[in-house]
Length: 332
Image (cartoon, rainbow, N blue to C red; front, side, top):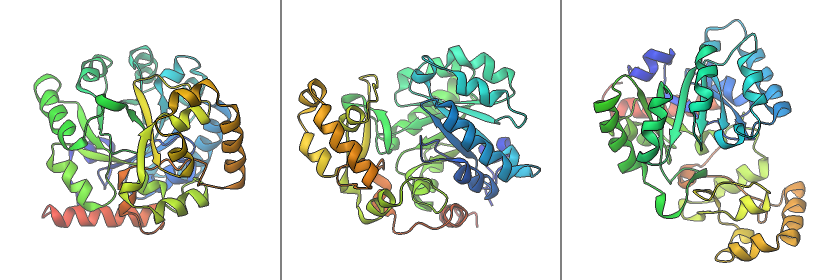
C-alpha cells in the first residue's frame, strides 16, 4: 500500500516505527507492531538490564522464525548509556540481534561503532537542528525529528520546536548534506491524518508513541491508559516536575510532557522549591503510583492524546492509521 524509503529499507508494509517508550513499549507491543508490518521498538529506556532482557526475550520469542523478526529493535536514553551501557551491550550480543538501535538525548557517536559492528541501523532522534550534524557524523541511517507535541521527554522551554516546521527543515538539510539518510517525524501522530501529514512534510515515515501507548499490548498501567483516553489535548504540559518526583536526574535541556493532573498543578511554577525539598512530595508520588492513583502519579502522553478514544490492539490501530493515510494521499 505504501512505498516509501522506510518501508523499502526495513521491509515494512506501514511507514510507522513504534516509539521506544521506557517502561511502556515492552516486548508484547514491539512484537505486535512488527507482526502488523510496522517496526517494533522495545523501550530499553534508562538501560535497566533486567527489564531490557526480559522484554527483549518476550519480543524475540513472539517473532522467532518469522519474517517479522527483521522488524524489531531497541531504544535507549543516550545520556544514561554514558553511565552504564551494559543493556546495550547485552542486546547487541543476543542470538536474535536488534535490526535497529534508537538513541535519543545525548551524543550517539561513542556507541555508533559497536552498533554498526552488530549490523544494526543507527536511529538518532533530535529536537533541534544543531543536533543533526553530530548524528549524521555518527553514521545514523535514520533521523527522527521530534516535535514538542510528543509525550514523555523532549526539548525544554525555548528550545522546543513544532514538528510542523522541524520536520521539513530537517528534510531540506538532509537532502543537501546526507540524501541517503532517512527521516521520520515524531510528535502528535495519532491517526492516519498525522501519518499522511508527516509524509507530506518530507518524512519517510513516522514514529508513533502515545497512540500505541494506549493499545491492548502496552504495559502502561490500566489506570494511566484510562486517564489518557478521558483527556483531551489541552490536558498535557511540559515540565521537570515528574522527573524530580521520579528521581530522574535529566539534563536541563530536556523536560517531560505528561497529563497536567492535580499533582502537576500543585507544583507548577514551584520547580525550584520542589527540587530543594522533594522528600514529602516523593513519598506521596510513590504511594499514588503503588495505588494506581493517577491524579498524583504521572501519565506520560503527548498532545495527540485528545485523538484517542479507545485501546484496541496494535494491529488494529496500525491498520486504521495506514489505511486512512493511504486514502488521504490517494494511494489506496
